[in-house]
Image 1 (cartoon, one colour):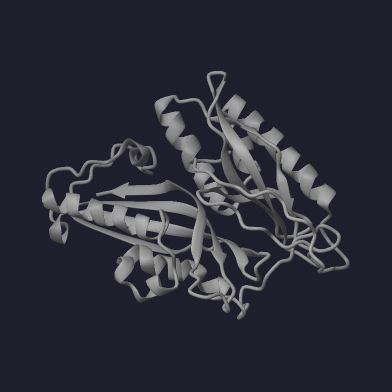
Image 2 (spheres, one colour):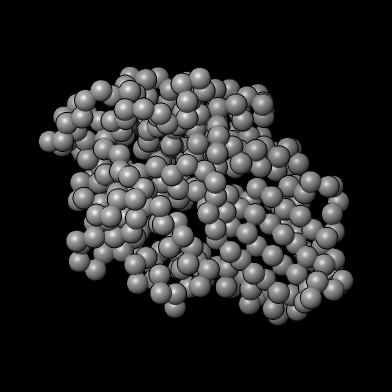
Length: 323
């Protein structure tokens, strides 16, 4: 089960001249894993079976699916079901665990027998150890085309190290660099290496607008995009850059100045459903957490005036508390 909707996906590219040997994960296993996930996820949604739905997801996807089931149950809304188009598989040539692969696929929401508009989605599957089952660990919806991904002569994608110094940014700092722009806006020094877009300057603008609106009501609003403890994965793009897939948390606080008691702060319905204690009232403050999965293109360091581009995202509130 996945969330949100945007657009844009590129077709698979021809095999590159690179060749790897000893693939621990076969293309056929990836395809079978994908089909198995779709069947289990759809069955869970059709039966409103939260336990089954959570059994086939992990990491950021688990947090998102759990909160989605909780929020929908609170309003009696059916769990959405999806129909998928033709998938494109990007299976890295791996020698050991963790095993993982990415699927790019158009997806439509099925509502009351009617299909919605197709949106292009990246789905990240992983298995940390041989004894563990395959699960969907993250998904993100593209708002820009997916660049060509390098393949070796056997059709396998090429994985990239998190410390690769041939890129504009080491992949292991891509999320933190994006966060600097989301937290501080275009004035952040990080903006010199991070492109403008919905998930960078756009997120900053939305949060800043919320802060201004709350200030009019005499409230203080703060936000912070920060790293999440979930695995990060990278694939080589045809131009020498990398597709980087990573998770982040967005933490927000709305409070009366100095946390003094005041009139109850309005709590959106999607957050009320996530309260761990029913009927919490925000006389002092409201805390919320969103879990995001992002996909970004990290260009090669030799590219002229290139910047990190966040091309896909999926996020949903996963925690809320009021006092």
